[in-house]
Image (tube, rainbow, N blue to C red; front, side, top):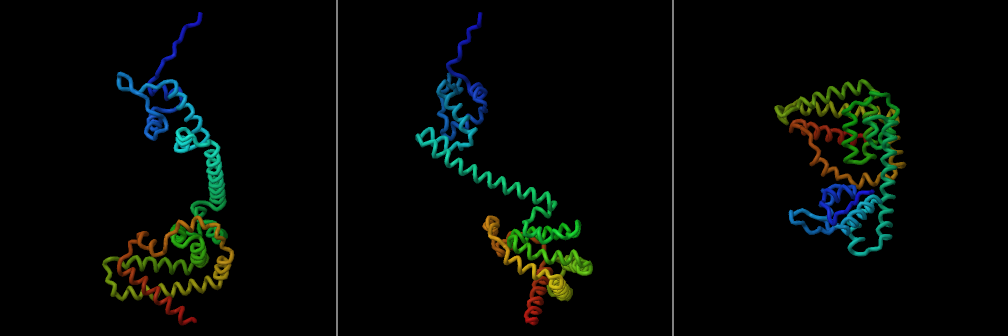
Length: 280
């Protein structure tokens, strides 16, 4: 003889959640956004869920599994909106998501092929650096390219890559660059902007930059830069749209430079501009 089981007329939220395969927290959220009408509370102050509530809850779970948003669900339930319209919009969303997944997959493959962290830079940049042997680029080089790419986009960083190619392939230029980096760092807050060392380092930095330019030209890297402008494709426009202006970036990217060091940089830029004007 089979036992007689009498189903309850109503159940508590925990039982409703367990049956529907969700959580009490999710059900409370459905109540808050108006997706599931909040049932009356029993004598003990707790919600009690009946048959109609459970049917709505099961449909919510099934619809969510398809990928329909809670907002669209509410519209379908409460506004009697055509579910086909919602499904059509969902299909478009899924197509966009698939395209994003493909983009991410391509980025992962690129990272695997190039290596970390170089592969995190845009392909336009890593293509220019791919011929360098492992370890030729320093972490600080990659940091600088990362910042440049953020401010000026992949094209700007790809052009700046010429500097690091020259430094990686000319030990004498790298050594002089390291010496000047240390000299500039020594222009700390204890150094007055009128200190003779400020102008002295600026003159030396200008000479080193000129030597770098000559090495870039001798290696044909400047011609490669010209080709970049020709082949650069605006399909990276999605990244460009998120860039900020150079002026805005300067106000947001922190550098712990002393007034003396800033003055040295200004003098270097002025000396380089004068030298380029004299060339022409």
